[in-house]
Length: 380
Image (cartoon, rainbow, N blue to C red):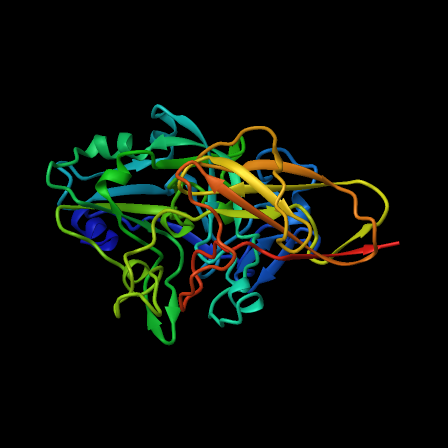
């Protein structure tokens, strides 16, 4: 049973969604902060220079399959339904805000973050948004644990999957209507650390980031963190959607013909807080700053090479190294000679996973974890 069926069965109006905005993205996208990719926008890493641990809301990347909807909070309802619930019900915005809440510092990252490097570094073409590394951000999310909300409707012992569904417009690909974005979660993950968030960095969710409520699924690919929640189905039978069958799976050499398992945990990555092809001055000391993160656990080591990978001195981490977020780091560098250089950073997480020099190829360009070669030029 999908959300529309649940609403019809309850004999109540469909949740109200206001008109789609004229632009796919509501917030301003100054070119100094973002690279725009159609309906999505990538954060420029130099825009994080001088910022704190969290990505400010005005600099947080946007991943839209269609366009940002404007949701009317007073008439919004979250519908809980499905064969895995004892007493299906709905919640208003006010009822959601009245429930016991918690705060989580967590990264949201597009599964295709780093996709551009499959081609630019490895000569392997992949379709999709050509993100460099700006399809990630860390925020302080406030909301209600998904387990608390589902508990209000009574999860049955035979429940296996949870399907959150967004109120965004239907996504049409090659003439095929795939419906609104939705993707199942295993019941174990749903009841573990998933949050229904209504605040981002101390403010109500901005429209582009899921107002009035969204999921935050720590450590997992961003596609799991459904925005503009309208309904959640809990099922005693396995659930699927185009975002778990054809999309967001690994396809290509070495993977099954139907694709690998649906993507879950994110991989290890590192980025410099520098413009791409930055210019630095010779004969003076520079402090190179960056951040590393992993869906597998907190970062335990970061190494930086300024000589194309011949040597790898350790960087110093600073501030928190939260497993659900990232670890800021820095290293001093005093280039003596002008010319082109390649900066490289690689991180290791608590599970022992380390960034390889090259990422394993997959046709859709997901989960690039290779060491990125960041070009800079040193001038006299």
